[in-house]
Image (cartoon, rainbow, N blue to C red; front, top):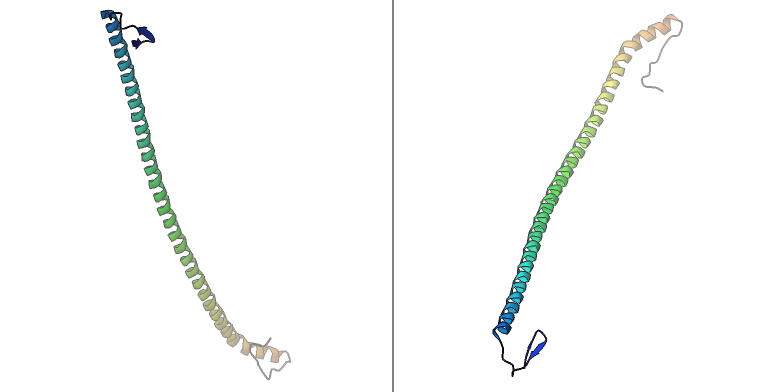
Length: 139
């Protein structure tokens, strides 16, 4: 007994050309369906592969951007350190300038005292206040 399309064909019956032709047509239809499915699967694999390649390209681009950002952060840090060094140098120069101005102010004070002290002695004496002792830098 041969089972075809859920029909039982008895061996005692003779198989006709149409029966064989129908089996070939059914087999051909199944081969075509299988071929269509393989092509569809292949198309899906190609699409998946294309998506993986695009994802890989995006990862590489993201990595390149991260590296560029890291380089920029390092450059910014270097510039901050240089700016900090320049601020410290400026502070040092300001302190040194303050000291020099202080010394100059002291020397100007000495100059003024040398110029004013003799005149003050004379002015006080003329007004009846004789000066016998002159002391400098007395508070």
